[in-house]
Amino acid sequence: MPPGVAHTVWKQDEQTSKFPSLGQNLSADVVVVGAGIAGLSIAYRLSKEGKKVVVLEARTRGSGQTGRSTAHMMTWNKNSYHKVEKQFSTDSMTQVAQSYLAAIEFVENTASAEGIDCGFKRVDGYLFPESTSKSDMDSIDKELAAAVRAGLTDVRKVDLGGVAGAGGVHEALMFPGCMNIHPLSYVNGLADAVVKHGGHVFENSLVTDFSGKKVTTEAGFTVEAPNVVLATHMPIYRNFTVISRQNPYRFYALGFAIPKDGFKDGQYWDISEGHHNVRLEEHSEGNILVVGGEEHRTGIKPDQYEDNWAKLEEWTRSRWTQAGEVRFKWSGQVMEPDDMLHLLGSDPLNDAQIGARYYTATGDSGQALTSGTLAGMIIADEILGRDNPFAKIYNPSRLPPLSANTIKELASYGKTVVQGLAENLSPLYLQDIEDMKPCSGAVVQKGLEKVAVYVDEQGGKHAYRATCPHLGCLVQWNPNEGTFDCPCHGSHFDNRGRVINGPARVNLEPVKLGTFGAKSVA
Ligand SMILES: Cc1cc2nc3c(=O)[nH]c(=O)nc-3n(C[C@H](O)[C@H](O)[C@H](O)COP(=O)(O)OP(=O)(O)OC[C@H]3O[C@@H](n4cnc5c(N)ncnc54)[C@H](O)[C@@H]3O)c2cc1C
Ligand code: FES
Image (cartoon, rainbow, N blue to C red):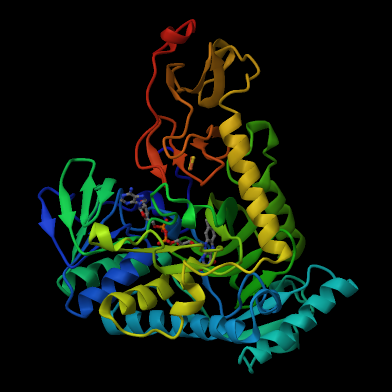
């Protein structure tokens, strides 16, 4: 298993490269950076429309957050329709609801048209209160009224009877027409369809630089195109216009063996702080109950980690009582936009003088199977010069309304960045690296410098400058994933300092521990 990649129900760690790495300079109409659901949806639509498209992926398709999803495509918005309505307007909320219906339909039509075997299946979704407290029940009622105002007139309250297969849930809101998919099979199919329609996909082609029309990979090859799409989950640049408008969170997932009669078919989501979601996957190893939730901010200190998987397991077993052994266990990252809406479209970075148009697809809010698909619809239409009914609400140049929520999130962003930068200056607890156990990591003080140290299975020590090459915040060891994570914008580096998640585009700089007065270095 590659370092930093835990075991997902979709077998992400077994996904191998199918496409070559970029080995020559090319020109195209559009260059798409990132082969997750967003990048490949955009590339698919444009190549089908006859545009010359090149996709550049750092690792393999689906190796980012797409292959780490719990894979619900919902007609519900995870932030709650009534909150979106309060933050924006009834009209904006209606647009969001309609866009979610359109995204599900797009995936269904595309999978059918291209013969993509991704197990897509329409199911009902159930939004349920965590308790029968008045405030939980009021939220459910508010959400029902808002969903109907948003045009989802088939949403209704149902009683699931408290049966074990439905997690003991009684009253819930039923959202018909949601969709289960196998996310890796879907993006694999999209990549094949891009190539079938004349596009090019390159894997193992990390983009390390871009300027104007020219995008350059780590190997030094370039693609020149008048349209550049950064579909890298978080855009891989330093411009604050987009990166300061969202905060990175770690989200946890488990897959339990479960008998078929232990689960009433559907998708389940609660309105608790834990943001739990539950669905069934008919897996080659039997039926798997896929459960997600228990998020926390990315880049917390190692001693602040709780056992979020244990919390998730306890929550699941208290509800789905036939859940058997845990077979899959992983986590991933989601980006929470300050104003709750995705950021999809023409990038504020656009500058007529640089002669290229830039586009971004980010702000997933844990729903980018939907928003990544929407990116395919919106950004492709923008590049094709067509109007798209959803372009305006998701426009990354929109001004966020100054609500209590946006102010809180912006303040949290500001605090994290100030802290992340300041920590480079404040001395750390003087940990002796000789005390570190095999397969562990830490950020330690050596003289005036902070060093990210990993001790491998044989006790060999690997050391890197602990300053994130993106914008200089201090990275932190993530004991759950065995990675060094940056709290500011969510860059991740594996235990050998290699960047595995942007916005950073380069690795942590190796250092010789000896130069810092350490006792030994591998
Ligand atoms: C545990 C978990 C559960 C989730 N559950 C759901 C769910 O139920 N429903 C839902 O809709 N969403 C869910 N999500 C969110 C969803 O999976 C993601 O938001 C979505 O897959 C992101 O897609 P993307 O294409 O934007 O990014 P990614 O899939 O991360 O793709 C970005 C790609 O860009 C590549 N890249 C990055 N930097 C570079 C570079 N410099 N050069 C070249 N390539 C680069 C990466 O390798 C990656 O492959 C969940 C997420 C997690 C972590
Ligand atoms: S400083 Fe931005 S991700 Fe590290």
